Every structure is written in structure tokens, then in C-alpha cells.
Length: 310
Length: 312
Image 1 (cartoon, each protein chain N blue to C red):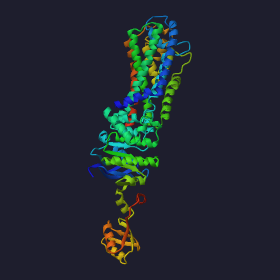
Image 2: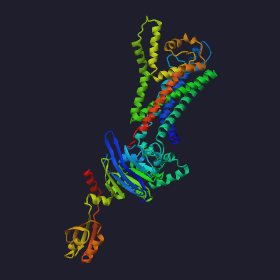
Image 3: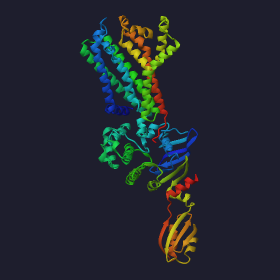
Image 4: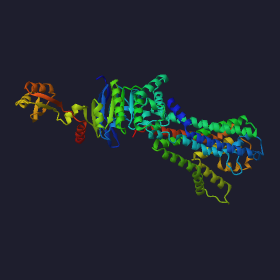
């Protein structure tokens, strides 16, 4: 993890008595794919607007790559790309003309811009329709054009607000692939969604926002342990020809809290990842280790847990 | 800002809206001048000065002059250029994307206003120039330098008047989410100023200074004075008064009572005013229109800058 790209301290936004975002503390580093989860109305879009400088925070500080978006909005917008939900383009212009307009607004020289536009249209798979009017595009094509629109200015940070809403499964897969490619080039991506399976597929860290509060934040497996696993690691083990004292031996392994289950299928709870020790214990005792799995937490369970809690 | 300006200008020129408006205005103008050229011989019975300007102000037997058409169409052009300036961007989902580019927020509204102003200017100048050229060809009398100067100031004031209507419709486009609402609001105001304002000013004048066939001259003068004052609330009155003074050099005063007298054929005997005097006379009206346009633009600007931009 390199330098910090987004940092907020106690960020708050209230609208006439309604608190949209309350005391948000965020810290996102370079190259991360950060998933911003939350139900509708949780404050995700408001947070993004504040990070872009499109809305003024009521209190708290926010810094994006070292710049304050309220004071230096143009600086921030040079290095940040924003793909809003249900992005729109000028329908009577072609895809290429729309991208060209964006490059003009970013003061990119003409020749360089043309080359970039062509390569990006290829990356998002829109080369064949580059010279068709955007009014004829499907929503999926518009979303892909939106991603090309962000990438044309080579930002360091990209905000994607529900980029896959309204798109068929094949289109979703394509868009997620493009996002992963972006992250590999050391671009930081903040991905807002309430599609938990998609977030689970590509995000390295997750923040759960509910009613303006950040109720949980961290890598998915850690969150899962905290939320569902009671902060314990659960390891499932299948054993063939279990030795009689196997359960006792495993219980005696340091760090193991409990062992439940029948003789050949055990569920071991421990306070850290003890898979190497447990597999050694099983093999040493003369039993055969058939399968071993550490429980992975489904983001949906985690989400439900936190959502219910708030 | 120039990128926004260029794109908006290109959009305007490529739109069907522009073509239709231009054709309409153009045809109305040519028609009016043609009628004027037919009737100009009968009008020019006393004095041969400023014949060229009479092209624009002469009426046919039952048809209104070119001036009337222009004062009718310019607000419509201004409204058509501005009514969906901001709310079309919002509706098509472009506004968030546009404002996430490294441009200052005011570049958007400034670029749109300038593009609209340029198109307005091009339309007004070209229509008046074509109509003047046609008139020149038909009647064969070239304008004097004073007439040309009056025409130029007329063009400038017409553009400012159009800019006022455009700024007004941009205000509505900033505050209303749907283009249809802002269009209706703008046209509603136009109808109000065009049709209802004269009636209202007459009614108020009747209430305050009632006259009948036996009233004294001072009372009648008072009546028209009150009516004139009230009607000056309407920008249309301001425009018509200032252009009337410019294009009818014999018009020596904007006092409504005297105007009513001088516009009849007896009044036409008065000697025409020199250009500088006409300019002085029209100055308050012109300033009024400029101020109105500036205020409308300021309201639109502030409104846009302070709004929150959400894509949904």
C-alpha cells in the first residue's frame, strides 16, 4: 500500500435537520479497490459528492491526494474520475465525439487525444460503434462509454457509483473485468454498490455505510469474522480413519477454543488461523486428512448483520 | 470555457430548432418589408429625409410593420435559445459528468450564455441586413450615414432585448427541472407582457385618472402619462419605445400623450431629430433593458453556482 489517496476526518453533511453523512472517517490507500456498501439513502452518493467538491461538507475535513476538494476543486477533478449512476451522454453526438469533448475540457492535445480515444474504445469493447450516435446505445454500452470517459484523463482515483445497475450479467462481467484492469495499473477505485456479490468479487476492502454512519470497514474476511464468526476462525476438517483421541489432541493444540462435530467431520473454532498446526496434528495422529476448509464469510451475511445492528 | 462555448455553438447551429426559427423570422421580415415597399410611396408625401428607415416602420393597409414582427419574434428566439440550457443537461445525465471535469462551474453557464448570445446576434444581424438589402434593392434609395447609425443602434438594442429574454429563460432552466416547465413559464411571461400589460396599464390609468369625452387636456395628458408609466414595467414597452425613437426621427418625445399626437399624420410634420438627440431620448429605455438582462443573468448565475448537483 502506497500513499493515502483519500482521507476524511469526521466528515459530516446535514440537510435541514436530516443528517446524510455523520462523522465519517475514511482512509483509502493507493491501488486499492474499495467497496462502499450501503442501502439506498445511506449517504454513499453524498460522500462521493463531497470528495469531488460538488457539495460542501457541513463539518469535518476531507483530502483527496493531498488537495482539499472544496478549496481546489479543479485540481481534484484533474486527477479524479467520476462515473455517476445512470450516466448520460449527448445523444446527438457519437461516442467518439463525446469522448473528444471530454478531452477538450481536460486540455488534452488533439493528436494525443485521438490515440487515447481509439485505444480506450477498444478496451471497453465499443470500437465497432464508435461513430454511432449515443442515443442508440443500450444502458450497458453507455456505462462502458462512461468508463472510457473516466480513463481518458488517466485519473489516479476513480469513483464508480453503481456502475452495473441496469445491466445484463454478461455486461456486468465485462465491466468488472475492466475495473480490475484499472486497479492493476495502480489506479485507486472506489466502487459504490449494493450488489454484494459483485463487491465480493473485486474489492480488497469494504466499508459499510448505514444511515450516514460507517458501521464497519476492513478486508472482507476480517469483517466476516467480526460480524458473523464472533471474531473466531472456523475451520472445517474432513478426516478418514480418525484416531480415537483425535478430538482431544486437536483440543489441546494451542489456540483451539472448541471442537464440535462427528468423528470424521469436525468443526474447529480457534482464535487464529491454525490450519498448518491442525493438519500436522491430524497426520501425526495417524488419521488421514481428506479435506480442510477455512470458513469464508458471505458478504451478504456480514451486511445483514451490520444493517440489522444499526 | 471556450470548449463549452464551441460545443454549445455547434449544437445550436446543428439543431433543427435554429433552422426553423431562422426561417420564420426571415420570412416574416421579408414579407413585412415587401409590403412596406409597396406602400412607401404613399407615406413619403412630406420631406424626403430618412426614407430608408421608413422601410422598417411603414404599415400596409392592415398589416403591421417590420418593427412589430421583430419585437414579436426576438423574445421567442431568446426563449428558444435558453429554455433548456441547464435542465437538458440535468435530464440527460450529463451535468454530473460535465462538472466532474477540471473546469470551473461557471464556465458551463457562461459558455452557454455566450453561445446563445452569439447565435442571437447572428440571427438578428443577418435578418436585418437581408431585409435592409432587399429593401434597398427594391426602392433604390440608399440610406444616409445617420440612418445607418440609427440602424446599427437598433440592431444592438434588439440583441440586448433578445439577451434579456434568453437570460430569463435560462433562469427558468436553472430552477425548473423539466424543459417543458421552463418553456411554459417563459412563454407565459411573454404572453403577459405582450397582451395583458397594455390592458392592465389602461385599466389602472382608468382607475386613477378617469377621463371621458368632456375631460380637459391636462386630464387626458395625465391619463396617458399614468398609462405610460405603468406600461414601462414591461420590457416590451421599453424596447418598442426606444426603437420607435431610433427609427422614427420625427418622434421628439417619449411622453405618451405627445407620442400619441405626433404619431398621427399631423404630427409627422415635425422636423426630425438629429441622431444624438434621439440617442439621448432613448437612453433611459436602453439602460432599462440592459439592466434587466444583467439582473436575469446574475440570478441564473448565482442559482446555478449554489445548486447541488445530483445525478439521480
